[in-house]
Image (cartoon, rainbow, N blue to C red; front, side, top):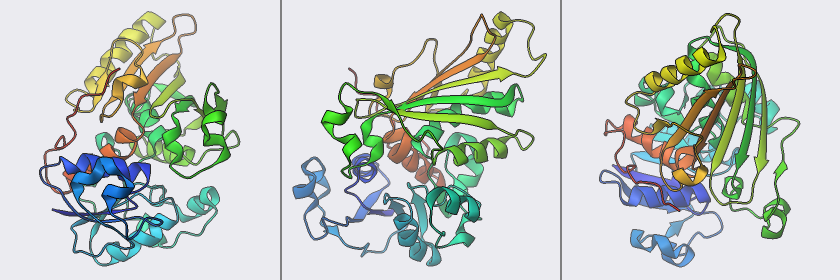
Length: 344
């Protein structure tokens, strides 16, 4: 199939090109970049020289699928013409994740340019909606933080085991902010420093609540979601805390045993979600499409604790997008994504 990548020069676009280069069924035929249009990809990004392409201002060739790695708002504007023409689209930005146009405007400060498409977009967290993704024309790739948080919560929310009060304490490497320059992502500001941001509300929060309601319509989540920036390049670490509903278990020991069994059963056979036996480390997912999850129960309080890690540029962006592409075109889901993490 013929692929176009909009904004190949952003971190997600760069990672997408790297993954697709070794995908046996994908042929990247056109790539765009806003500031580098007209330049050879090899000159701008030498590690992608094997693609042998020129960065263009627009997709110029006939394609079966377009990936957009533009920032929100700009991405929707670029995607709409392809969707109107019947071309399948996977949007890595946030532009099609929220189904309510008013909620989109509230969180992103812009009126959505194509609100009718929000009704047809499919939230692309593969493990939670394979059927929808398989039949989709437009897939909204999840945010990196929500990917870990939703995978950490899905088994217990689906089973109705936890109350509505949930805390997601999240940490991300700097690449999650993209390649654009800002004071907070300068080396001197980030190095040897950790800080919370989005304290008054982060844009990933509404997609977490939206998708938890979708997988369990009777669940009304009231989530505290707090992200932090930490001094590393890649990685997401979500620490999730929740209370069990009254009477769910007789003791913390029983809760831990049953919850561990539940997570193993829920993700049995999933190629990219691995339930592990001890708290995972972000380095263990560097460069691959895995999400590692460790569920446990605090023996003193009886509270659920789930730790999830992933690479924000792979399972949190480009790898998830390729996983969705495989489903949309009837290709084995793991194709092009079976690399082991780089370690150390």
